[in-house]
Length: 270
Image: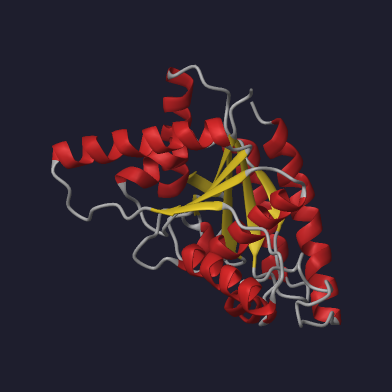
């Protein structure tokens, strides 16, 4: 039996919608009858873990069969000794090996900061998804941009982390990682700033090998869904108690295009 694919949601910046995207991917694959595991590498904040807990509680309270992944939470040590780091990495690899044998897909939600397990997860990723807020400030993690000409001067610190992860995969003779960058929290009105960011992402994508995608718009509905543990894919089903609105319809159209691009690539990666 083929080993499961590892999908990492990563960025060295918080507040970009990583956990929301991770949960929607998880539910998308579960609805396709895939065996799915998830790992929350941000154990301190635990957003994905709380999302899954909310989903389990809501399903039980409303007697709804909501799909759930096999889930685990991992918190990297802040100042590990060399031996602790080695032991933690070995334990994490062992868990990944087990999950890959027992599942079709493993979705890993990372913290918005660097750590030894953050880097290990990136090196293990068959597919990497990096949500960024739709701003030049967030673009800084991917590239250093000349403010006057808006030309890309050099890769940013996160792009360098991804490059190092790719080097490790190459050294281990693993298939090349597929990398997507999503412009999340996009404003609903087209602006000059939006066009500039898209142009920069296209240029940078060709330079450091990622595919830019339009992400999800900024909507309060995602906060409401989090509290119930629901996703856009659950809306409209009987017993969920959430009625379909125009905001849900528009957001689901955005989500579907993202999931189709990423999901199909994820299943065929490697």
